Length: 107
Image (cartoon, rainbow, N blue to C red; front, side, top):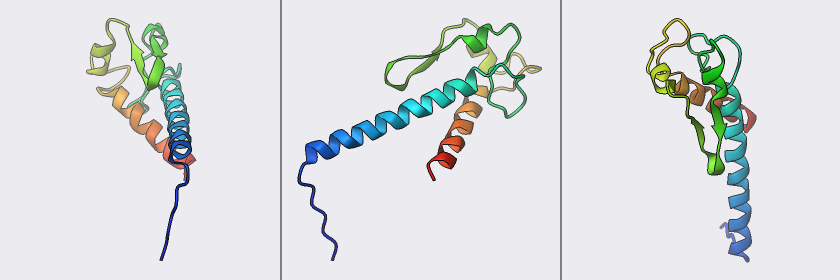
């Protein structure tokens, strides 16, 4: 028989919330780093196409794990407009890359 007793659920919940918050902060920091890379974007690299640097430097981290880019043409780049710089879906590729990095780190 296994018995688990949580004597202070409020403390347990606060501790769990803190752990989740730290994980989300670390994940978004890593994702931002991958998206803002100034290295040449290649297929599967998950990097923002880099010509002038405007699209890459447009990524910003906001509160509660939100990352955004307000550069007017970022959606066109994501949809494959600049095939010679990056393939369609580089944001999704960056997310997948960051997930794999996170999984390796948290094993």
